[in-house]
Amino acid sequence: MSAEFPVVFALFPRLTQLDFTGPLEVLTRLPGARVVLASTSGGPLSTDAGLVFADVRPLAQVSECALLCVPGGFGTSEAMQDGAYLEALRRLGGGARYVTSVCTGSLLLGAAGLLHGKRAACHWAFRDLLSCFGAIPDSARVVRDGNIITGGGVTAGIDMALTVMAEIAGREFAEAVQLALEYAPEPPFDSGRPERARAEVRASVQQRFDTLWPERLAAAQRAAAELERARQLRSH
Image (cartoon, rainbow, N blue to C red; front, side, top):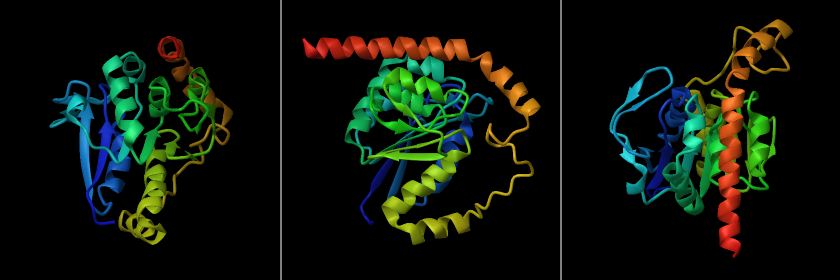
């Protein structure tokens, strides 16, 4: 692989930075990679932890995209209502060789109409919302369906990016990048999946996510209704 390979991270306010900086750390090492950070309006962009990224381009100015990556985060509900953002995902995703997401970024791919009939991963607490968009929720850490490769919650973005890298540049190259990054997770606790966490730990985390559920559900339902209206208009 020697030709330029545009990698576009479609960002939005209050995203989770590791959702895209994890894959970013991997994908910048692709041969020929040209990484573009873009959002609806461009300019400085704040994450849900208050970290600010500068030099973010407006999505409308991005025309080339070989790989699209969509993160998730606390701003997902608002992003699902951003028509310009979703239109950019449709435009860029429609011509990309690979369409990827991390965490609740798959809900944004769904809201853009890119996941209908496709299996997809998502953060475990919001995975069921994929059904609003005709997608098939999958509990695997990395899920591939055609040219769409989705990762589960937050840290799964690194696994997703290495999976994509092996597809593009070969397994040996991807393994070398993994070694260079010393990506060999040995978490101190076996509580990174809901089925492994102790009941009291899962209950406390679930309670926090439950406060977000009504807003996320309403946003997903509105986005799904908008998709259906657009489909009906196209059919007439």
